[in-house]
View 1 (tube, rainbow, N blue to C red):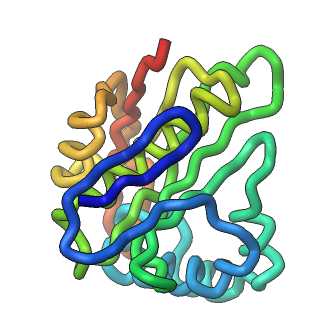
View 2 (cartoon, one colour):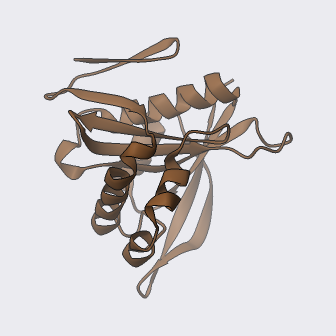
Length: 185
């Protein structure tokens, strides 16, 4: 079992290896980029940038993308020092919409799936949005054909509220995305 403390809550998941979940910092930029490339290779219809677009991002751009701020946070799951899973959460700074946040980029290295890591990453992002930002609603989008991801999000309390046809194009094929929402308060 793994006990992860974050703020007032603790996340416990059964694992076969020692995994920790924490906010990413600038020192994690290289590993973040490598894991994003693996995500693109593994699930090109679930990740927005192409491999080439992700490759062209500089380390400074990656650092800016993962550095925790008042509007963004990226969590990583680590086995020892190796980054094996990620998810991000962001929100708009505008008063009229900062009560909600958006989950993005949920990915766990395929070698580590089925161990509750994605659930724990989602819990960490949810707790952060609720406790640090006072968010009362979470949003996300998921490829309509990605049944494992849809099942994961539904098990975490997300409900589908809409479908965006042809939201993404990979090669010559279009993919629909489901929009999902979770009420926190």
